Image 1 (tube, rainbow, N blue to C red):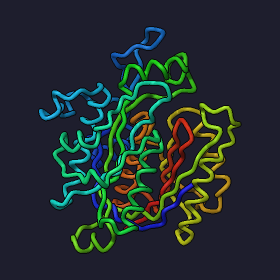
Image 2: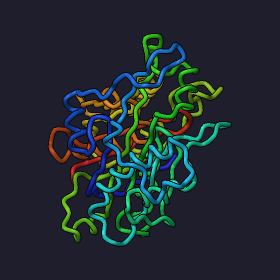
Image 3: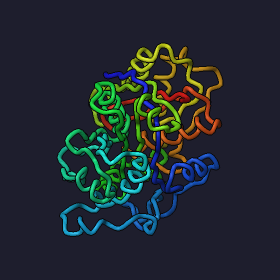
Length: 354
């Protein structure tokens, strides 16, 4: 378990989702309940089309000419195409000096070929034509909670004064035939024959973070402020033989609230629900164990209803939506964002008005 209680300003957000190609349009669509779920061209084991939430093909840029000869999986290429526009949006305020990027990616499944190559960060820099400090950057492979694990790393990077700004984000896609086939065989994809399942989605989000002093010097008006972030581990996860008790997310909440003891009770929650029962049960355990840290009648938002399960991109997408909502005044702060992974990782973060 790790907690970072360090305030960082969110100066810019880049988002690519099935219902919007920037944070403003995505937030408006999610607020209106617009769904990006459609029948796809991929069929399940019953020869029925999977219902998925995908970004339209013509909305994504092609693979950059510099990468056309590179050997990469289709999922690697798809994630580059998803992540590049989001990175470009978030990096508009970055100076010519390279910024470190802390990026969440899908979990590598034990015993299965990895769809993400070791060159992903370097490839993304070429795809987006953004100057990334590759030596200071880091990939996080924790899956659903990866973006918030990346956030903890980015906050530690700023707290240690290694830089005054950093980019944190996540990208993922379920448009991967091998991955879909394994999930389908496990009975996890929502459909007419599967009720306890999720809608596969995809997306990317990037947030430009800066120290308060850096934001002031730049003359930038922050959208919101990160107050703290924390991680936890669930021993009894979906693929474990250990008993499932929901301890991991509860520990992440408790660690987070202890690190941010001066932050008022939570008034809004962006929840990492994906339609499956396990995350909902974990939320129930975690919220009850920290009930005193929630204001009565708090709001709860779950964007997966509109954009499906966006995997490693979920945390950063929800951070971006929450930040814009706080800035615009239709979401009450403090705002809690939480995510879970298929295996051990769990994570949460607190946002406040800047």
